[in-house]
Image 1 (tube, rainbow over the protein chains, first blue to last red):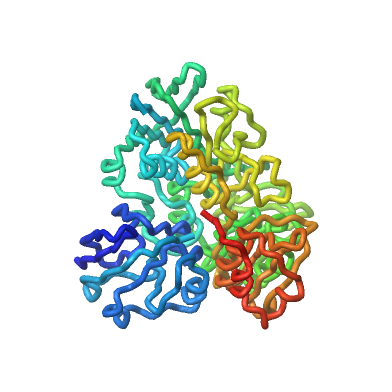
Image 2 (spheres, each protein chain N blue to C red; image 1 turned 135 degrees about the vertical axis):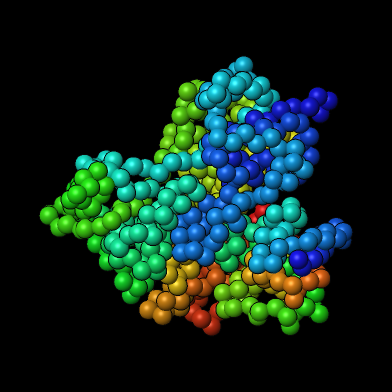
Length: 107
Length: 422
């Protein structure tokens, strides 16, 4: 069971024992982690589940596909090199300990 | 608040749940009771016509919130029941099992139901509509044993179902009465690319055809086996999916004496004509600031409207009202097309096409009084998300500039005043 850490807008941290196969977004929604809106339910259509991924884990993630990369162009908060849409990050044991930071705004 | 109030929410889907969640986030500390007529925990509806049908989504994985959310947020969920009657003056809701609930606030989030066809044979087995998780599971089960399917209606649901079923290997025929699918919702360029995508994947599209009757199959006369088109054409099939629109569930509001037209009429705060009675989601119509006529109530069925109206309605509960102000948006996945729509189109709006429609990657921008009013995108998600912000900011643009790929849309954002899209 991978553990994932969410850094919330107020700087506090939520650590969750997640299920492999779930996305970072789904895990947040299911555990009521605030600040990830995911209005399209994970269809890669809305860009409201933006997170900043801990640099140390970036290389372990499947790179963003074309759709995600384009959506990231339009995220409401600053886009950074470690910006990802959390609906597109599927959790696995390899990602145990992943930390993601929630941006100041999603829309 | 000196005394704790009770909020009673009729309906437990996107709008009802968002209203409850927002009420708690805003600090509403009273009792929240939510009544939903389905057996499931509130779930996401978009995957029902998309991922769920192609096996990419697990039915257990589409819950909107976990049980612990309801426990932690002190939201009492009554499943498998509905509010049968509302006495707004007496502030009393009566459930269909006779239970009575007193409320200080009521929210009508009763959604909509699929329109059934008025056709001979419409009651045959195997004639399905798609609205709920149970509908989707029924369709999934029937599709397993089926070879041929007929979809009636070229709206979003019909097209998404056709795409899903053909990808499962069924022979699919879609019958649409208009010249193009999505005729009222999308520009002709987008509709044409939808037609091309469906035909390329083997969906047989019969446009400008009307269904005359549905017939049973030989040997099993109570099960649908054939669709008869006006003019005599016959389509043999093992199942029929009807996607001809939705009817808002406004009966509760009508019986309660609330102002209704097609849907419960509210203002931008989700307030109905009765004090302390709110409404949001697919059952409600309100004047949308981004509509061509921003003063007339409009009923838009979408997740975004449901969520943002519910958020606005919840602000009444804590005495800090913030009306709806978000740019409407919507999306649809069909085959390899991602359609994304932002803003609301009017036939008289000027248009600019960005990108080459024949490439399957383009956007159509709509301009109203020189400002970007809407954008419909086909496989151009960046245009969509940036477009939403351009619409929110009321950015002015020239059609020929928008049509030129030399223009980076983000530079337009820089010219806009600070946006407030939430």
